Image (tube, rainbow, N blue to C red; front, side, top):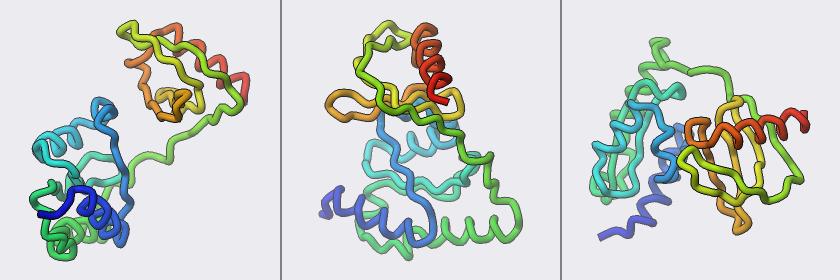
Length: 168
């Protein structure tokens, strides 16, 4: 049986031949669009799961879990998804989505306490804000945390936006 890590690495390399690869941490799954969440759930508990979608994440072109990728014959495994994407691009039905997110990077900040919408304290430094809605933090140990407005308290949102406006 192939090691899941080996499948992850070789699958990523195969995907990069014709697409972009985005890695989603399991803790970020709540922020995914519904169509991607559904494809993720259908993949079962097997990790890794490779999901091919348009950049707007509105249509799924293929979803593959670890057992489906064990043979590591990606040219065969991903063939239909790749063909569907190429056809959609040619037909003009491949939704390129909105413009790239606007990013405000915040440098030289200190570790502070932030509060989640559930009241949990988070000790981290604010490192950026995407589209004025997604807050990027880094803990003292270097762990990256992404939080949506729904996941943060109103006080933390206001503090983060004030810090960002001071950096502009």
